[in-house]
Image (cartoon, rainbow, N blue to C red):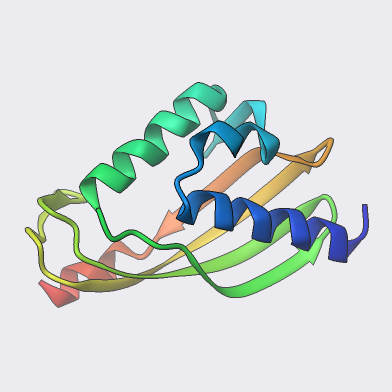
Length: 128
């Protein structure tokens, strides 16, 4: 798979998340996906994302940086949102926060098989 092809798949995945098109998620995410070393499977990954959108109704994923070296992608995602309650054990409670997530993906057969994610929770803490 070329860099352009993998990048296009990833951008489709981000669009899928932003549209909350959960029925199409399996097109981008492997059935046996692992997150931060833990096997969560497609159903668990979907449940995590659905919970994220419940906690952050205006959640939107924006690619700030994308580096592609097949079969891996490194991305810096930028968020500007208003979580409704506690967020990472911090009382955000509807206040607008901006933060980033650094995430690495490994693809297998054109779908995300492994995800390693670190969210800049210190940036959130500084804002509340």
